[in-house]
Image 1 (cartoon, each protein chain N blue to C red):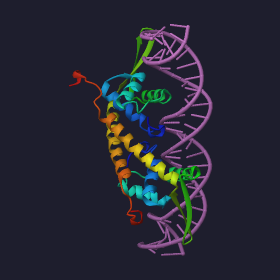
Image 2 (image 1 turned 45 degrees about the vertical axis):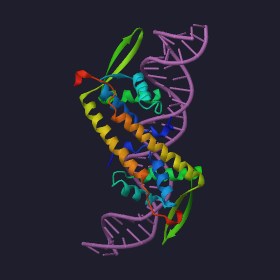
Image 3 (image 1 turned 90 degrees about the horizontal axis):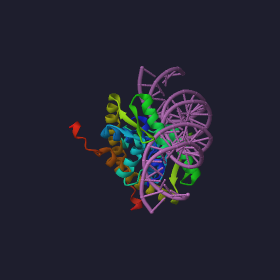
Image 4 (image 1 turned 60 degrees about the vertical axis):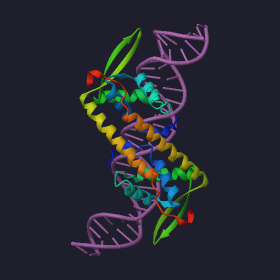
Length: 116
Length: 116
DNA sequence: TCATATACATAATATTCTTATGTATGCATC
DNA sequence: GATGCATACATAAGAATATTATGTATATGA
């Protein structure tokens, strides 16, 4: 498990990516998929996930569909056309961003002969 | 320039990395170095930077030294031993994290023959 | 029956960021 | 000498997003 603060700012992008690959998913399914893909290293918390899903819906990025599974309700989320577009952009931007971050974090920033 | 929300959660790690390579730096210098390293793609805002530096000082991660440059004051930040340790950990953890994120964001998550 | 998994949700709080604002010096140029 | 830009610090209000805790309820296997 990573320390929590690394995940900040990535939640939206993760959700959009998964929805862009899966046509439709429900909240709990998203948490499980992320656990699986990251070998338990990233675990989404419900208190962050559900508010974000609601926000995406309010924005028109996703639409929902409620399905009854036995007596339980399951709420599916699916990208709108606008959402699909946004997903592509966000994912690409994030991939570029992490390459930039790699440059920063791998870079030797100064020559300090007294340390060698 | 990246959209702002990508930078979230990375500020602390960026600062620690730069300080671990440069023995000591002042706030403005950090903003300029990041601009330079990222070809202007990441620009730290002062409203985020200074509070974070103050927090790092309060935690004992860095110590400060004020230098007079003409009539202006410049405040240098330098990692403590504890800070050096933390810097290594945070940077390594972040590099691992972005590899994990790459897995998530590059992964084809399901086989959907009706889409091909 | 008891624990765990599935499945949703919200509320209080904390953290961290943006945006705006303030102070002040140094320097080049019009 | 005024004006603008760069240097250099700082804080405050507000927004966004996360954590932690809690609540509801069904399903299932030991």
